Amino acid sequence: MKEPLFLKPVFQEKIWGGNQLQTSFNYELPSDKTGECWAISAHPHGVSTVINGKFKGTKLDELWKKESHLFGNPKEPVFPLLIKILDAEDDLSVQVHPDDEYGKKHAGELGKTECWYIIDAKPGAEIIYGHHAQTREELIEMIDKGQWDQLLTRVPVKRGDFFFVPSGTIHAIGKGIMILETQQSSDTTYRVYDYDRKDDEGNLRELHIQESIDVTQVPHHIPVNEIKQVNVGSSSLTTFLQSDYFCVYDWEIEGSTKFEKQAPYTLASVLNGFGYLFIEEQEEPFELKKGDHFILPNEINNWKIEGDIQLIASTPGSKNSK
Image (tube, rainbow, N blue to C red; front, side, top):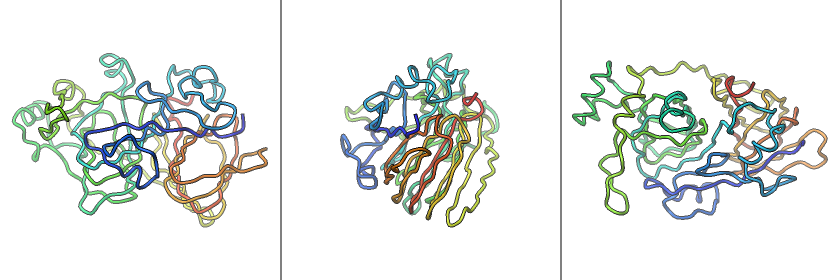
């Protein structure tokens, strides 16, 4: 099938969410506390639906199981990636995610390695990215004593920044930040600290101290990541990351740019602008606008994008592309 799969997102309400997903992307939101747009997802907690073509109305998880040729006949039982846009109106909890071994054993699903592209950030916005403990004993002591200012590493961010967040990394997105997150298809999160914040019923949110201690990398190491950028005509093509789980790219198109398939399938999200997607053997192009999300299935070997438009794209990494 030589046509893209455009997808309808699923929205998740969060205690820290806002309404910027409507303001920025014109999505219809369930409330003014909407924190997450699950843009491309086959996770059971929020499954995207195809909105065009032959498979219109089909859920992505069903497509993965019944039409595996679209994805190069993969061996994985579940669609391995999940693309989100997050609107942090308030601080997210300080948290950490397990690796595959721990996640499958204790949560029955994949671990969660992820990465962030900063779509927007208010002046002074920060993330938490790592910690200062040098031993696990020191980590436990600082958590027990609530020494959060001494323990946590804060990093200022701005629009266009990119961060790789492997499993085992203590992290949090700060208020005033919107990100596009590329991650493994997992919803397992262990909260270390939540600012003693209460939910709508006045209850403190659950923490997962022992699990967090179990899975946190000690000491913290900032992952080595070489970002590569090339110009093709007036367009700028950036490779943010090539990892075991996913590869992530920034396509900033001015004019017309041609692409060749680099993996069994490609995921893409339009962050800004307007343009057209031309597919080999298709007479008419597909319109692309801000807030669109789509998958280019395995049968598409070449495509062209025209316009003034920015997309964040991803492909499965070496563990998921065999």
